[in-house]
View 1: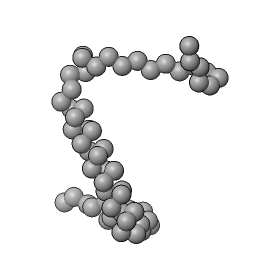
View 2: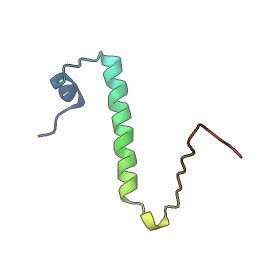
View 3: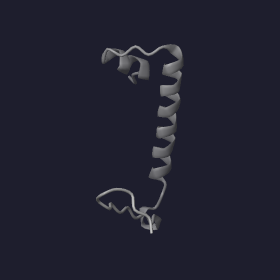
View 4: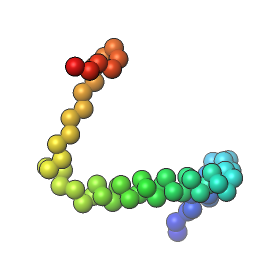
Length: 60
C-alpha cells in the first residue's frame, strides 16, 4: 500500500491547505522525475566537480 503525501503529512501532525498540498505534490513529482532520470545516466559520463572555498564566495 502506498501512502499519499497528504497521509504522510497528517501522520506528522501537518495539515496543509489545498493550494499548499498541490504545490508540495507538484514539487515531489518533479523530484521523482529527476530521480528517474538519474537512474538512466551512466555516471562514468557525468563530469561534475564541486569545490568549497572557506570564507565565502570567491570568483576569479
